[in-house]
Image (cartoon, rainbow, N blue to C red; front, top):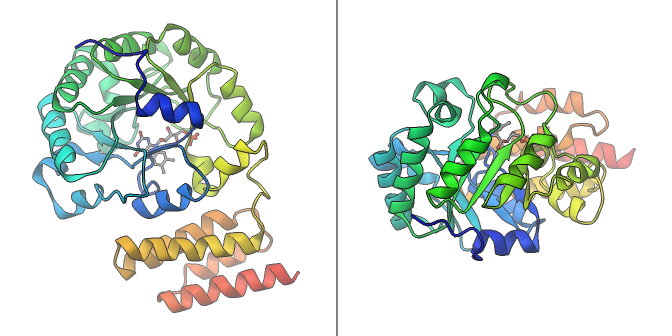
Length: 328
Ligand SMILES: Cc1cc2nc3c(=O)[nH]c(=O)nc-3n(C[C@H](O)[C@H](O)[C@H](O)COP(=O)(O)O)c2cc1C
């Protein structure tokens, strides 16, 4: 398969418009949350990871991950798995059942359950498997294909140059590089020098990822020369981060408490579009906790919100909290 690094596709077109990218995050990048992010962002969003084995079995729960509304574009649907034939068949299912614009293969997840099945970052240990997986994925679809990796398994086995070479040769259109190894998990410094090196050697666009949370870290990542800058945890706490950074501002303090209150209500509406009430209540509590971190008296609020059970009580606790802090 011939790679097409220079040709324009939806990825390069979108990154030219907006360099920021919303990361795939299990339990975060849901259809409802993506809609909320879209209210602040016209760029590229990734879905949370979906199991290829689940997709092949077409279990009801797995198929929910394929919900992509017309407003939710451009979107890259991320899959994880370890068998090339399963990746191939699952992407075929996605081509039939979803509106995804792009497919992304997870080769960076360090979570035990994923590693145990030989998926995620475990693939970084097996170059032949990487090649076979991308080849199988490429065969399954004509849509753009991306891969998300880490620098390597650990500092002793850094292999991003080799992985980039393989996936580009097999026809991947872009690669996201989290500037840490699997062993480093989610903490410690991001290796900007290695991300810059990846940019230099990669024949396909590189999306840099890791710890971009404000203007300072955004600028550091941008200086590596990446084509895209992917934000994960920063968006979880502040889905408005994309708008703030594009205006040259830090996300902290960008929205007023009144605006955050409204956003939680908007997310309530989005959640009810996709899920039953029990799930929505849990999600709304989760958002309220994330978005109020750092606001005054939020510790007591966080404790209280987890004691309530119904949606009405959840709303009441949220309303009371925001009324109180806006009156201060
Ligand atoms: C709660 C959570 C869920 C995540 N889920 C995924 C996932 O589904 N797929 C993936 O490739 N990475 C996943 N990641 C990793 C992020 O996409 C990202 O690479 C990582 O958090 C580093 O970026 P950040 O510092 O901006 O958060 C997840 C991370 C977190 C914290």
